[in-house]
Image 1 (tube, rainbow, N blue to C red):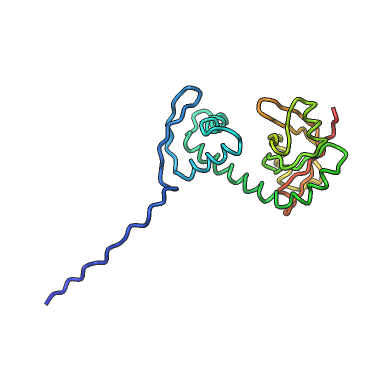
Image 2 (spheres, rainbow, N blue to C red):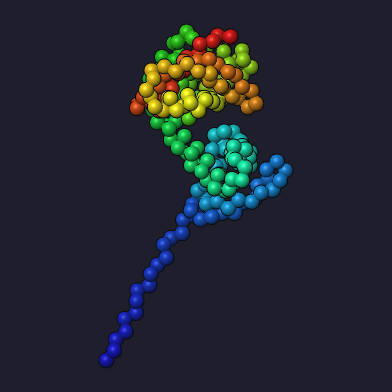
Length: 203
């Protein structure tokens, strides 16, 4: 007598919409463009856009403006999104040490600031806010400016071999920019995740 055993049914793994590709059309500069990205990237980009006080199309346009000619735009959006998330992670780590530096920065008589090495300003003291205002950049701790450092300066900060680096720090708020001569010092839990800046110029 032959007995046939029916194989057990194999259940398909539950679907995860976060990793399923989603097709969206956005308007960039009056031109409609279509992108097919996994759901997690759309969610992350919407979050980053809110942090940057931009709409999703404006965030995509600002990101793609940095892409080189002939770049695969969808791949570039994924890569930049991952890089931005790593930046936010770095900022979160830096903020865990920031309260200890808040009091120090606030009591400095000179213009001073705390920032992540990725260019996110974590704290400005009153003298720094006033200095930026004189340079026509309206900034505050509630609406912090962006910070740009030359690539070689960022590399030197990352190496952590120098106690102090004197350089030009560029602060941006919208279309306005202010160049401040500053002394930068590594600080933070690992002496690399956070930067203290002290303005050399009072003009």
